[in-house]
Amino acid sequence: MPQIKRICFVCLGNIIRSPLAEHLFLSLSEQAGVSHKYEVDSAGISAYHVGEQADARMRRVAARHGLHYNRRARQFRTSDFDRFDLIMAMDSTNHRDLLDLASNADAGSKIHLLREYDPQGGPNAPVPDPYYGGNDGFEEVYRVLERSCEGLLRRLEDEGLE
Image (cartoon, rainbow, N blue to C red):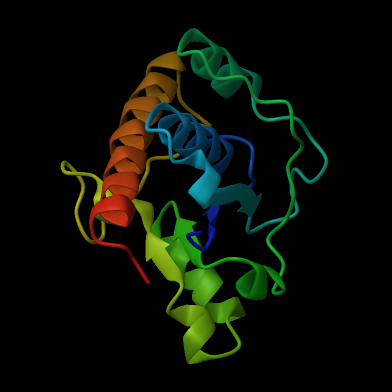
């Protein structure tokens, strides 16, 4: 039986990008029949929104695509480095903040930028934060995260990722 890969998606407040990535990855792994191989979660670097529902605009966009989110925002904890195998940051600021929290090189090696796995992204490309924009930004973030999560899942299934 394969070992379960534990993945945590991280953005600033855990109300838009990371919860959407969590649910997209879960949905994509279910569609591929491999969800039993993954445990996914999401968290925010900041405590700004701890205990709040995900942003209503994100929930509407997600629902239009068949995803429903009913969990509450939580803050990333240093103990998450022990719990998760991969920690996927949404942008370079989140990445840097996570590296600052990492207590050793092993913890730091678990941190990746999610758009590394987006064929239209690249090694330093951010998942844009649509918080202060209009509804079009939320649709764009959905598309970016969908491509990124598809790429991540493909990489994990085809090659593995440590």
